[in-house]
Amino acid sequence: MFKRDLDLEKRWSKLLDGLKDTIGKKPNDLNGVLFLIGVQELGKGTKTFSKEQKQDLIHIAVCKVLSYAGFYELDFVDQDGWPHWKLIKELPHFDLLEQEKLLKIQVMEYFEKEYQIEI
Image 1 (cartoon, helix red, strand yellow):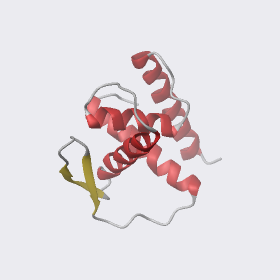
Image 2: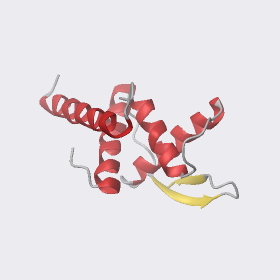
Image 3: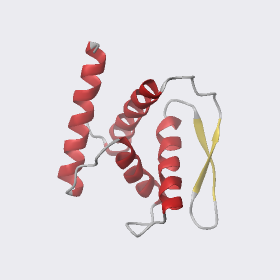
């Protein structure tokens, strides 16, 4: 494992611990964190979501965090309050591990910018 990967995992672990302190439960994985971001970005509070809505919330989160790297921009918010994003820059062709690293980095940037949390 490279040093930068080790640093990333240390920062990621610190973020998960911080989320546990904030919400009372440590997210299991990247998808759990993305779900939380999606719920936050939707802005409708905590409620019960269908499986399809949960997938949509994760998609909202992915678009939001990747918007910081210039890949997406908010296109519009529909009549039900759901944000819709458009791709403005092609995503790099990464393997799954590299995709996860990119998302983790962007998730940490989200928390740093949106909530001024130093990770």
